[in-house]
Amino acid sequence: MTGAADVRTLTQLVALALWLGGALLLAAVVAPAAFAVLPSRALAGALVGRVLPTVFYAGMAAGALVLALALAAKGAPFARSRAALGGVLAGACAVAQLVIGPRIARLRVEIGPSLEALAADDARRAAFGRLHGFSVVWMGVGIVAAVAALVLAALALRSRS
Image 1 (spheres, rainbow, N blue to C red):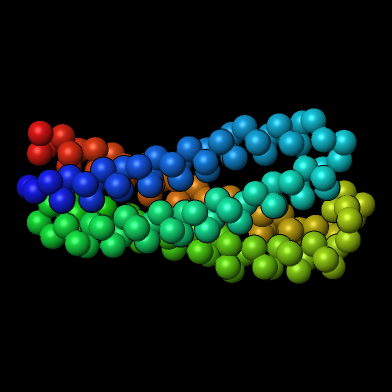
Image 2 (cartoon, helix red, strand yellow):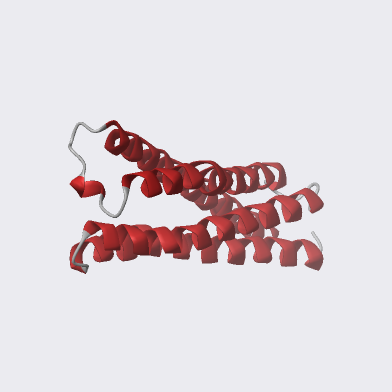
């Protein structure tokens, strides 16, 4: 393999590692901390809701970069798999941000300042819960794809050394 192939693979590694770090920091540290220390769940949700688009747009960019660089690396170890996983990462983040995110935002406007004020059996509360669950699933799909692509990129570099 050429030096250019190594640069492409290292770029993929960096993009994936940066995105994974941000996504995992949000999911494992920021969101739980916000819900633990802020005085209301509405404020915590608003905080996390402001950070999520950055993570999702970054995931779309990282996934697209991995996809493009892997497609440019024809014949490199695991290039096709890395390209597919980059597409999955970008797609999962796009669905979460561009499909589910606007639905959650519309529902939030309809619900008003506090989801907690709704009755437990309110259809809007149930709809919010479902949409939130779908968003979490799509982020999880992105994380799994990014981890797999990261591992394959590391293995590709290792196989060339």
